[in-house]
Image: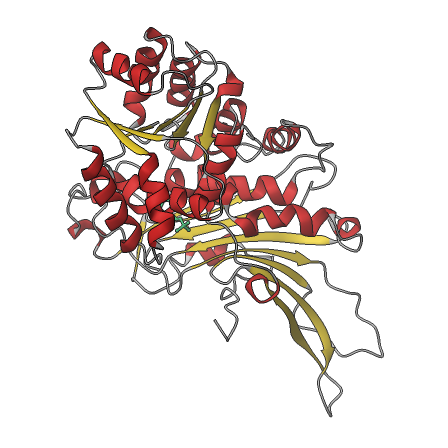
Amino acid sequence: MIFGITGDLARKMTFRSLYRLERRGLLTCPIVGVALDDWSADTLREHARAAIEATGEAVDDQVFARFAARLSMVSGDFADAATYGKVAEAIKGRSNPVFYLEIPPSLFGRVVDGLAGAGLTDNARVVVEKPFGHDLSSAKALNDQLSAHLQEWQIYRIDHFLGKEPAMDIRYIRFSNSIIEPLWNRDRIEAVQITMAENFGVEDRGHFYDPVGALRDVVQNHLLQLIGLIASEPSSGGPDGFRDKRVELFKSIRPADPEHYVRGQYAGYLEIDGVAPNSQTETFTALKLHIDNWRWSGVPFFIRAGKALPVRATEIRVIFKRPPELPFLPKIDEQNELIFRIDPNPGVDLVLQAKESGVDASRAVNLCLVFADEMAAAPEPYERLLGDAMHGDSSQFIREDGVEETWRIVEPLLESPPPVQIYQPGSWGPPGADALVAGYPAWRQPWLPAHQ
Ligand code: BG6
């Protein structure tokens, strides 16, 4: 049951993901939309088809017909108890419903109260979308609202980065290759750099973005979750195994230090509809984190993320320590690196030094793996996550303690933000971002394989 099925997220992501699950034969249940809009099932079906086509997905008529037959609609106000009576009627005789709340978090409490009032929460799972609060105390308040009627096992908090196949691949690369894990510590690794660059601005999302900013929009959630994948300990499995390890890792990350925090705003941002005059919201952020555990002590984790940068790319660079300087070897400029390309063209690069032909010099060469060249096409993040929610696999979702720990880490930055520095669209943000990594290898252009 999808609350808010007439909204933007459903149009851009949900219909397409469900359609793709249908195509793979993985949908087995009816899908009921719930919204204030008084839509008939046919209107919903037409909207679904248009939405799927608008994403560029090729629509197969037979698959769509199967998918459309699952769709029906309940119209009603979320504040009205009668709506939940209609919801109960729509799923009568069904067990283990999944309620997907594609609605503003301010409505989560009301809807969960309504579902509980109609006796619908006992075996239900409830899927919710970020933002999970805007700081630690609001995140706790939101968790309290959800847990008034639900147990933690019933709550599926989506961070779509955890549904990205190349993010899941991090675990495989780390733990399924015996040559990697022995290197994964402070003895061998000098620094880790995470870049999430977007080559577009805030566009028509000014009203949403201005009270949020880059730190809350992508760092507290997506990029800290990537650190959780890169830096956590191996798990012994089980439904909570991976989540336990990620939370354990978050607990050992020191609260971020505003002294090592840079905020930028691209020139032109203030003209966007919905942005406050003289807004101090950051559209770029760079920061340094420390992990206080045996494996990572002393290895800085740098993050930079921003809008209106030169390229669209998300990658994690694990930078290894320099080799010793030996008399028979020429000096090297670049260290070994292992780069996880999350987007675009997911894959892994290993940067090695090799002899330059014909001269006594070494040069960095790149062993580049593009997953799409080697493996079948990957499911989309929402396709994967919605499928997992329907099957009751919560391992790629965020638990309450994970949400609260990640807010704890960024809280000092929210409390004492430095002023924003203006940067030009198409640049790599303000100069402070370069100063942040002083003493460590500089930020570099993301690896974008030539044949993409
Ligand atoms: C969203 C943010 O969560 O993630 C957006 O609100 C951002 O601002 C988006 O653009 C990036 O996701 P993806 O999957 O396109 O990299």
